[in-house]
Image 1: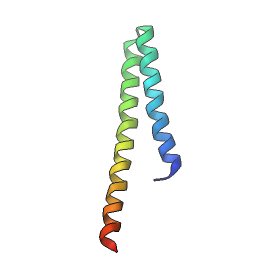
Image 2: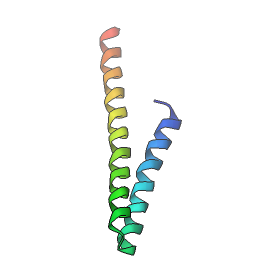
Image 3: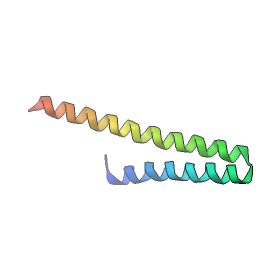
Image 4: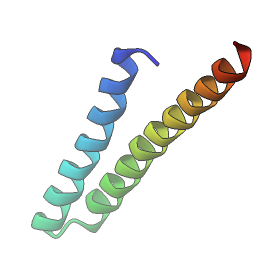
Length: 64
């Protein structure tokens, strides 16, 4: 995975956390929910990339 993708996924997660906290502070339930969704999406992408990396490591282990 490229460093650019890692940064984008971490940024998406951080934006979600910020949006969730701002929504919570303002009492805006919709903004809070959108922030939670964005945070979950970023976390899911990060987890997917980690699984891909693990698969590549296993593949390379048996390749040699």
